[in-house]
Image (cartoon, rainbow, N blue to C red; front, side):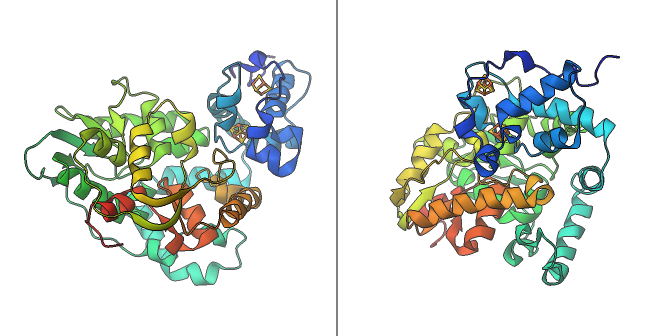
Length: 390
Ligand code: SF4
Ligand code: SF4
């Protein structure tokens, strides 16, 4: 009988060179070949060629992949671990249904895509978080500051001065509830820079579903977001979450640069004036999807660097912080130990703060360093542009 995993692409392309090994955070944390890109590909190939069944050990090694895509940038064969893992998880979800997988599916189907339910869950968390400290993953929950209700964002913000065009801003799902203040700042910055900003209703882009192998649901969420975001007359879609941006970009069919972020758009506009630099020693941390997707954030990154009084490089800046969306809850122990390696690097360079914008990374860094040390790119820009004093 044909293996249900036989549709998984690119397995034969691996030449076992091992160039991916030093890039893989799970391999570096565990030292196990089974938790490396090469080991995962070899295990899946053995299954597809009927030399092995999907044992618990094989499943565990595959499930521990962060889908950070660091191996993709190193791989001479161009293997997409993102596609490979989405295919595996799609098949595996049909074959297995353990408690964590069922809980994840329930959250992704019944809560995350429904703004009202998600908001109720976050509000509830705010009250019960102090009693959840015994849970192994309690440290990964958003801080009290993030759980507070945030004011609504306007549906439209007109351009200040002459209008350059119209941008549409993604509110997201979790980000809309936990990072709404950042969405508001982003809209303010863009409107000050001469853009009319349209902000459709909150909604999930399906990136978390794709990570979990819920491919059909992911496609449907993508379709809905494109319907809302790319209406006629919109020149750019602005997304602060690099994971959501890379995910939506995978089916966009638009010109390069259509999906962008606030910093890149301000940099390209050429009229953003830096009035004050952020004092102290700052690390600018790029999310995995900023580093390993085809999106170009270079100009925005340069603008952010110019807003810093002193920029410090982290050793191995390309390594994932271990958050990876739901991974930090589902595989919190491995996720945490990868995060602690990143924290030790931050401590070693004696930086005062880290600039990080991807929602999962921000929550991870806030839990590792405390909320005061983590500053989002839009908050940095607001400070630099004189919209905020700190
Ligand atoms: S995507 Fe990340 S965690 Fe997964 S195999 Fe590649 S480097 Fe390792
Ligand atoms: S870099 Fe690519 S080809 Fe080389 S071992 Fe890793 S996955 Fe295989």
